[in-house]
Length: 159
Image 1 (spheres, helix red, strand yellow):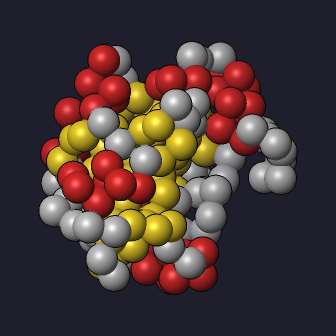
Image 2 (tube, one colour):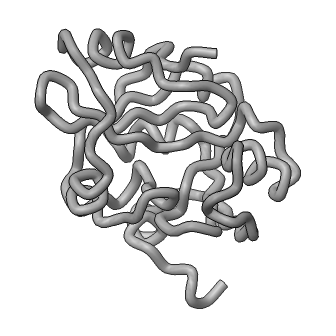
Image 3 (tube, one colour):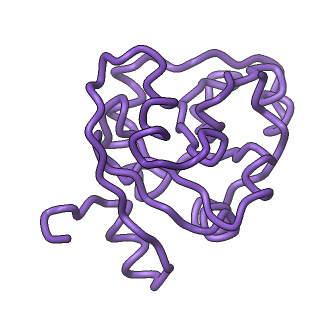
């Protein structure tokens, strides 16, 4: 798939991590975007994860949660030993990760941030996360995602 290279896919290739790229076509302003991406890919939405950048006690942290739910900010803060969390400013998140909103991958970020992956990822043989740009997801084993991001796992998704 020429032309699909991103820092995330480059990292996976360098590390020789098995993965599959999945292009999709969903307008960025579509309501319930994550569910529409899952539908476009033909996979259950609980296997598709979104990457959200939050500030925990002032330190940026990446939360990887299923598109079927919301991020529980209190649980995220507790997972990294913090007290308070809030979603980060969009511009700061984009500048820090090197990715644009809607295409932020937990992998291959410009500056490696502490990462928390929702514990539900472990229920699946593979999960889908952004490959680093809108319109492209990558599928990989959750253990590889956790290892490459040096993530902790916790139940950070709220239904």
